[in-house]
Image (tube, rainbow, N blue to C red; front, side, top):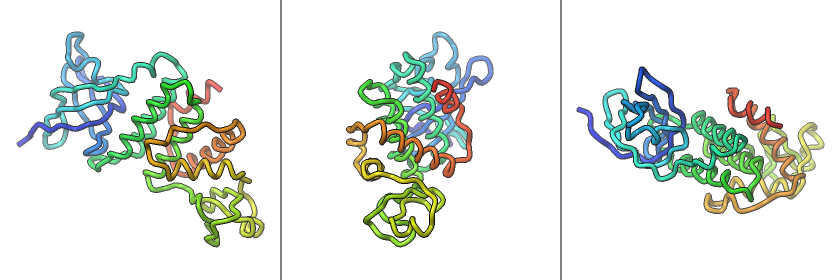
Length: 247
């Protein structure tokens, strides 16, 4: 027999179903990615009308059936309306939702991923942080949560922890000077760029968006994270194509 449960999370996507209903994909802290049906959510007088849009973050009271969840009540704590006031920011926000949807697993706890998504969207709403930098921080930290990311703290060939100057995507991370000379290829990385990536990987979430970088470091991050995105994912993200169209 079904029962009512409370989950905390964010709406990743919403699709119309029938005349008045919606099918939601929700990232929850407790059960990862789930599918939720919101009956009558598209009716003008529905209490679920605003709370079933992408970016809505809050508490979901759901009826748990045998094969699906049905929304009973949604208490929204943050609508992230600021994201819809600027086209570029909105594109970045939807890309963040797409990447979370790609990596989230159904019915597997996703507290860290949900928290990362929330603080990253918050960072997008703050003009002090360039959207380009927020994106690269979010991507690298998401790779970490997914368990597939480059080794940035030691040489992937010999294990040395010093003299790391070359990023080699095919080898899976950094190479020291000696190994780089033998193996060849890769991308030269300066100390500031390497430290920035190490900081993103290792720092507590509360301090993740607390720094700025030079244009040179940001450009290097973009090159490296573009390589990682191609290697670690096999999907064309629609919102990312829109972002690239703005450049």
